[in-house]
Image 1 (spheres, helix red, strand yellow):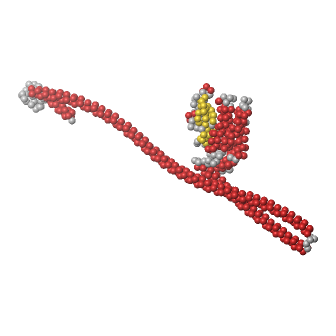
Image 2 (image 1 turned 180 degrees about the vertical axis):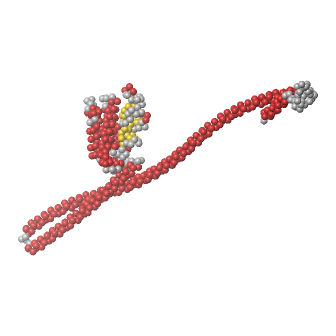
Length: 504
């Protein structure tokens, strides 16, 4: 505002200065005659062209004011320039603040989006958690139901066992009574034979007496005595037959009672067997329980593999200690075990391959057929006669392998050690067969050679190390499986850890 006022004042002062310095023009009231002398104007006249001293003095004042005003104007302009610079600086700062604000807003938007996404993810996780909690609750309910059914089944089993024991006691009592009846029958038969002998001897004596006394007594008296003897003989024979009939009837009654008790015992045994099978099926389907009474359960097979079979493996290692070095010994036994395991798996697969193929041709459900085959194969494959035939066939196939043949026919291996290795192969084949036909099926894991040991250290332990100069493996990799791990066939878990030799 002050700048505008100064500009206006300066403009007025400049105008006044120009008016004072401009010469006064003639009014034009008369023509100037060049022939006549010019008119002289009186001092102070309005048309006088001469400047008065006061006019000069006023002009100086105005020029000073103009200079002052120009100086003030320059000062104001300088201030204006400074204000303009300050304004530009302020605008620049405002622009920077605006940019920062935009960045902050953008970051806030990103954070808001991330927050929204996190909220959405959290909501989905909450849904999944709720679903998982529901599933867990359902699983717990099913587990408690299975546990209740198991307890109920156990109670029924105890009841059936008590009934079976009672029936066995009754059967033993009946058998004892039957034996006693048989003994009594034998005694009675002996007595009867003795009585018949006595009767025959009496008849003979009577006939002898009759012949001797025939002439001494009257014939009438003899006839009466003969009738009495005949009546006594008939009565004795009738009593004898009646007694024998009673004994035979009692024995038939005992035999019938014994047959009924045997029938009841067989029925109870069938019920108990069906109950055991049903309990085993419930335990297998539950996935968290196992029939501990089953000698072919996975737990017992795992103990048999890792305890008794491993003891034989250690005995073979000791026997080969002075014949071949440590690595050759472990490699030899590893090759034998791997061959037995693979031939067993091939044998199991061959039992169902053709039938599954027939199911495919017949447009039947292959999974149902495979499941039915597994159930039937497990029941039939656990029989002793089946196992003996299958194990013999597996060992024969393993012996045909050139590597195994070269091991068993080495000149420096004693016959006793070869026989021990063959028994070991039979035991291993039997265990592998039972594991492969089990529910769920198991396997021996040899397929970790060359794998980084740190990736499998949850399933294997380090048996020994071998330096790189004696192996071609990478440091930290598995060089040899000395003892395989026992795992589920679908790789969802393991029962026993294996032992591996690791490269260093």
